[in-house]
Length: 428
Image 1: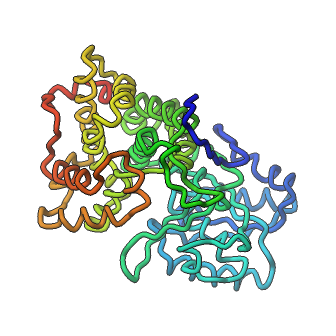
Image 2: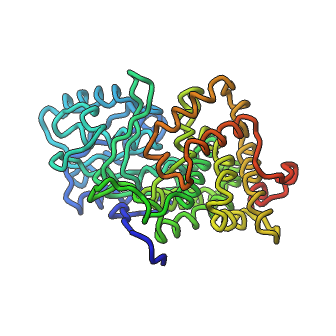
Image 3: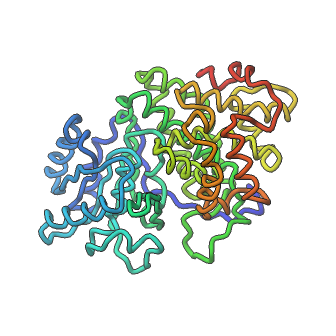
């Protein structure tokens, strides 16, 4: 307990976790009284995996009809959402949905969240970017993540790309949180190493950022009575702490051996726990800067987070020393000198990033030095994340982080060559 906390915590009303639990879904939806649903996924799952057709048949046997939309894609756009809305409404022929199921990674879940808003009245998703009126109908969502990383199954927002200006827009409302999050680790068993690494680093970033973010007592909710994000508190930190511990133990194992079922299950829990933390606490500088990096390089979300994460940790050594020491110990950093242990942590995290095949600095990642000023401006423009960074001068700190990340330099004098001896590379 922290007496200064202002706790505001939201989570899915039902969490189901376990290998094979996807088979329970038809009976559960029948029990809840659902009768007409839409399953949102991508073509991989309808052409290469048997579960979609099996689910549709099993649900029909229980009186639940399901329309399948498999046009999902990575980084869904507002244009895709509007086209999907028109297509699904045409196929429904006037029938009304009473639920939507999302099957896939964060992109499919984001698209499904957006469709929860657009399908009832056929409105374009652009109508909901600034705010969602309390009178707006929102369809109930059931999320089945197939990667262990994004945590979208427990969060209040959907991120879409606006192709008109090549930026990402957020649609936020607590009613977009899935009412049911069903995490079946078996979906992740076939994830290739690259996807496993990107998703795993994303989960670790979510956990660490929310563990270090602005305190709930200082967080600006803008007077909103039902805020999506509210700053960290003892409850969110509890979930973040466990997620970090699991990532330290299982992330590399899952990447190195996709058949390691213990590691796969461990990372599914890590992803969910991270989402339960950041889904209420919120995020800050890593994601804020990573959005700008993605805009320049068009590389994956997990990778853009990964290349920034070590340098943000380095920048918070004074503001979040106690928390960074906790993280250092979870990663097997055993120095008795606490300042040395904290200084070593960014090196160990960068060594983990490089161990999963992601460059450890922005120059190697493809960012030209001439873009650093623009990158800093773009990152600061994501004000909801910049305002949550727990430092006095956010602008100056962002600039320092980005320049250090481009050079591959930390403020500490710890010898990088020693990082390989850290717990991050032991994959115990």
